[in-house]
Length: 120
Image (cartoon, rainbow, N blue to C red; front, side):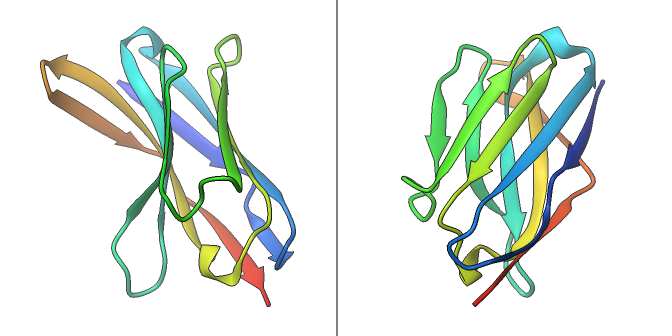
């Protein structure tokens, strides 16, 4: 089992920055990757960025060059630095962790979500 606690959301003007944090606890050694997803009102949840246990990152095209995901293994924490924020980044951001059950089979864990609002 993995527990996730996300934090760091808030209200910011367009062009501003925010940093989200996600602290993991539980069976940390079983985590394959961690990341952030977001869900705007009336839209499906979408991937923002992920980082594997070995440091490989993946970003949605819409955030490339503006967002940076990183991890502090000593603190079991993943960060999402969001720069040059746009109103379309407004959403509830969910921390995610996956454990690998078998080849190409994963179990997902979710944090409680944190609101990010970007005003124009």
